[in-house]
Length: 134
Image 1 (cartoon, rainbow, N blue to C red):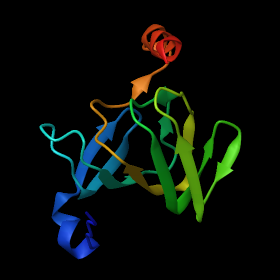
Image 2 (cartoon, rainbow, N blue to C red):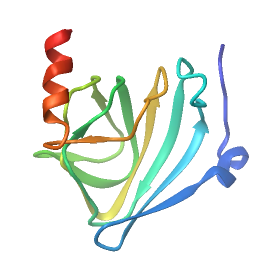
Image 3 (cartoon, helix red, strand yellow):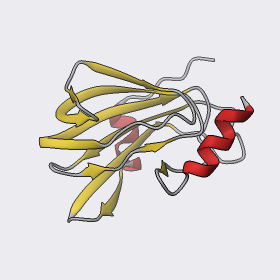
Image 4 (cartoon, rainbow, N blue to C red):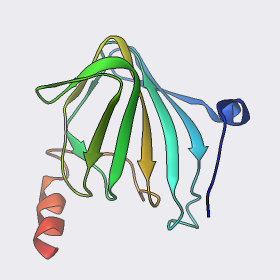
């Protein structure tokens, strides 16, 4: 079933999270999957301030990230629009270090991620166990 959302319809869903170093991450849900319906897709816009450093991490579902503004480095690679990054479930990626204009990207998932980013090395043991069971 197709789902459509325009920014004008979702702008009031924009939330702000303050992160270490005086940085901010804004999230705008375009397609929100409620916790009781984890099989539904997710689509949200992330806007992150200049200089923010997001440590290496993984998620529990496959996802695409479509870069729509700003710049960053992802590991040793430059990231800028138009750009697409794919991350397989339980596969670490990062760090992501924002450039002078910050970074803006859409995250697209076929189903809801049950948690937040799982940071390395804190979750390394669980990550290794999950990969070995596949």
